[in-house]
Length: 322
Ligand SMILES: Nc1ncnc2c1ncn2[C@@H]1O[C@H](COP(=O)(O)OP(=O)(O)OP(=O)(O)O)[C@@H](O)[C@H]1O
Ligand SMILES: [Mg+2]
Image 1 (tube, protein in one colour):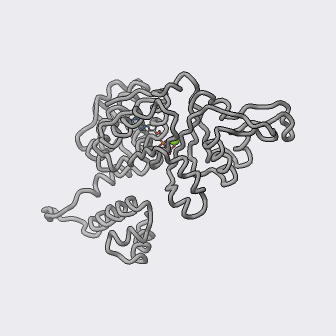
Image 2 (cartoon, rainbow, N blue to C red):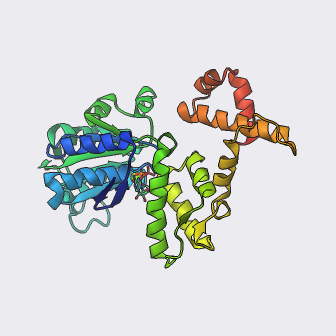
Image 3 (tube, rainbow, N blue to C red):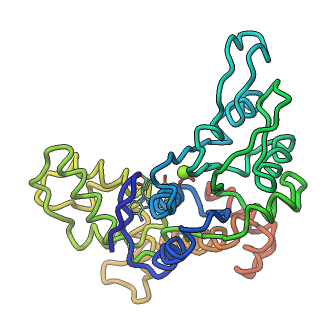
């Protein structure tokens, strides 16, 4: 299935994403707050665009503010604007992103990076739809839907005292989670084809017609820590490098090729033999990576999953340079 949004197309067959899109359609008409989570590159921004586009707010702006990319001292002004003369150089009053999103959607990207002192102000915005520009005593009302995204584990941030619990609950009214690409590897084929077409056209390589079965197998079995963004980069590069008409394993990035090799579990000794140490090594690496991914890098839990002592695992991770 392909769904067009104002920020690009969403290609998906996997149930998890189809479910997310079904929920998007059900809640689009309301103005409820939505929290979108998922690792980097899983498509959070596209889902936010799908929500905005499907809502009655689509005729008003979708305004994004990346809470992690703007220096802490400028973030408040960016969000709420400022009064004339509120700081040196503030020659005129300026509207912030909240004001710019009036009637539309305010997208707080990387909300986990929001400094504690601003979290209070966002809470007020959520609860009362009220805010004050920097250096201004007025209280302004606004009509925006607030959507937040993060690739952090906000539960853990709350537990560590870095994220306000009350704000977490206010943001988490509807939670949309995008699983990493390695958990929806059935979509790799569709995504790879989608990106091949786009990049073949863009770079004038319309002679590139597809992938060899070996190349496609490698794409499917790679663990894609950078998720769909990394897949797209790999395909863009392969389209440029390929001699055509098909993309070969040698056109793919090294780490994708290695991943393809590591999933081959050797059970019968081939006639010409194997390099036992390297086969066992890739076998171990593969399972350790899976355990770390499943536990979000928590070495205690990963060690449990693998039946190892924590110290043994830490040692192996260091030795293997994972
Ligand atoms: N289902 C999909 N179909 C097609 N393209 C996708 C899909 N999901 C993501 N992409 C593409 O992958 C790239 C990354 O997606 P996006 O920016 O939405 O990820 P993100 O979750 O916001 O990542 P980050 O946490 O790093 O900001 C974009 O170029 C986007 O167009
Ligand atoms: Mg994003």
